[in-house]
Length: 477
Image 1 (cartoon, rainbow, N blue to C red):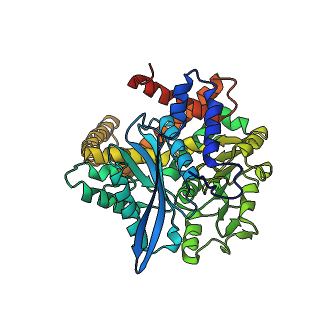
Image 2: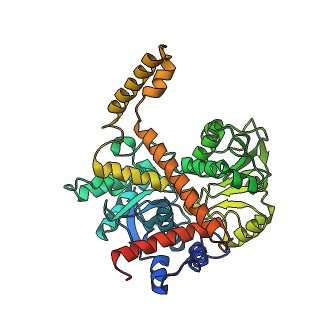
Image 3: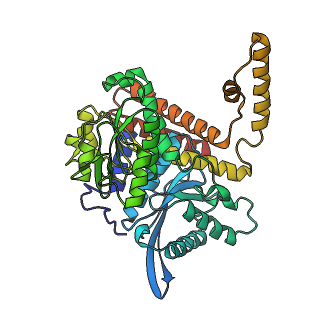
């Protein structure tokens, strides 16, 4: 099939970027070439075209679903709605999802979907018809189901589209008790989970926070430990960028610039992301925000002096033509593939610390895993144990008061006695996941002196876990 580049400025295909990263890591592992080839390439690539009638007009829609790896089932990956969707992009994103899941110990194979449509220029009626017909096409090929392949939201989709997909799947599987687990990222009232909306942005925050909590790593970058006071530039104020910005801001960082499609804004003293987001929604853009100055070119924001740069838009944003202008000490890849291999080489030579996408934006799939578990178990997290925990904690406060002879304040009691809500457990599980994965990458990086960077280390960890899975299955003796 013909592969079309997403953007003319791409230095080569996105999927080839991923293959390059894989090859760089594979040389540090001693597995047969056949196993490496099985892990490296996509298992299933489904390209479809289907008609949709909106009002009196019939449109033929191009769409994809790629399942990269079946070393664990179900496969997992978002559905992207964009006029730029193409096979190369979907294959790359599916591959990244495989390595991402392995890195953070989420027991799924990687997958990805894409529909060539512009959500901004399409009516709700058209999007619903496309989403439901796309779901039917997946059902016909047995490429969706709670134990087969579980889609989720991605660029251009959200909880609404996941509800449509879930409803369509359930209509074809009326006796499947687990049908609601066929997709994740659903609305709360339809089997969703608290914390899923902000999950990817929160994972970005937890990942960067952990880097700066390690004194040795912070010192290496010429930074003090902790998030507070750090200057941050955010590219993209969509779901991921907004939530990452909010968590950084709430932790005391300064969001000095935000870049969007229509332009970029700057304030050295810091921006309130919630206020900027409200302004964006009311004015269809962020330019002329009254508490900041406009930047002439949106890409100028990437080149500003800052401690941390968070590209949270699309891939290929930092390339060989602008990498030498980047002044950030840390680049946190909140988007998939925002830094090309050529740009990464330039940045590493400058001493920039790059947190790779297969680690840093794993928050979404991690919390999707929690949602899938919730749907399979048919019980809300915290429901069984919350009141028991509260009573046990109440016993502790009473014991403290009796032993000390003094009364605790209401605030102190509430702080100790509260039981864990679903969101508390989701946040806790996500933070644990990000911390554990970072230290696995870091230790591998430190132990193997020849591994050149953190991304290669992340791929080494991921490939090794997938290979062990295949060995345990008995496919490669």
